[in-house]
Amino acid sequence: KGIKGMTHSEASAAVQPLVDQLNQWRREYYDQDAPTVDDHAYDVAYQRLLALEAQYPDLVLPDSPTQAVGGSVDNDFAKVPHAVPMLSMGDVFSLAELQDWAARLEAGVEEPVDYNVELKIDGLSLSLVYENGKLVQGSTRGDGNVGEDVTANVMTIKDIPHQLNKPLSLEVRGECYMPKAAFVKLNAAREAQGLATFANPRNAAAGSLRQLDPKVTQARALATFLYTLIDPARFNVTTQREAIAFMKDLGFVTNPSSLTTDDLNQMDAYIAEQTADRDALAYGIDGIVVKVNSLPLQQRLGNTVKVPRWEIAYKFPPEEAETVVRAIEWTI
Ligand code: NAD
Image (cartoon, rainbow, N blue to C red; front, side, top):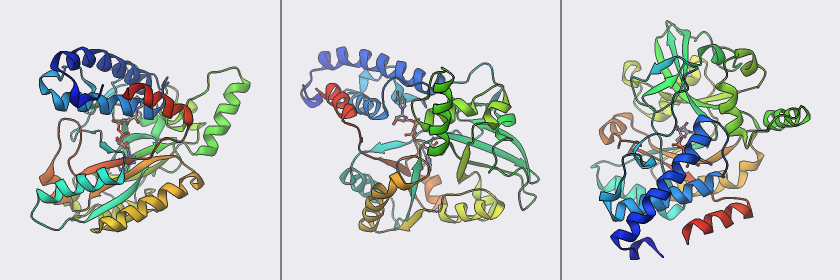
């Protein structure tokens, strides 16, 4: 039955099992780095829960996955509080939904809006802290407010500078990922040794970064793309595009592909191009991120409890037939 036609008691009966199922998938994915369903199946169930909660807001349960960033902090790691929370991101699944999101956003602000459109790297978020140009800390997102201290592991990732080109104290954030070739090699080696293989490069990256022995991380060929500069006003950086250029100048790896535009047709064309070309990339992407380019405007728009209002992820449609079957099971 469609969600719109559901009575309150029907919706109420549907919510708890959905919350329990999603929370189990989240534990497998974030805490154990070992998902048992693919992302599209998760996304379909999550969108169903969002729709039920939108229809009957009193049915938002305290443990609903819509109310908190996924993931927790493994007790084996020291805890790192995030002064600026590391959030999740809203999703859209079609260009029409993306246009609606942009139209709603633009209706609420009295100025023309420029967007910075970037690849959504399929890895895990990483925060890096520098003091006087020297790398002093690396941490995971964790539950968004408190992350895991993975400094020793981060020190082994080859493309992360230990020393910046300028003696600045700052925090940057970005994605830690495993290149496709390294993932294939790692899984082949694990299979030969009779070890469990990783479901995908994202989980391999997460499993490799969240290691107690930095030598294991070092052997795993992780790489990074940085895309967030914390407290940009300190450096007179006022747009996302400038922030990326600023980080690149300091010595970080930033993704070569991005588009800055106020034209939604141009944005659609870029998305179509990137969707078509994504298999040729050396790393996985699971969508495209659209961000308001002006950093002061981002600040004004702010966040919900879970996601920034100034950015959205356009998620690629699933590729495998099996995924589609699972998705259909959830929507009926
Ligand atoms: P998300 O991964 O969908 O989006 C937010 C993240 O995108 C950020 O934290 C950041 O790390 C990353 N990102 C990559 N490129 C970026 C860029 N250019 N700019 C900004 N951020 C960028 O959100 P989430 O809350 O971490 O995870 C939800 C998603 O995880 C779901 O949609 C689902 O696909 C997947 N998931 C799957 C399962 C499963 O069982 N298969 C379980 C839980 C979650």
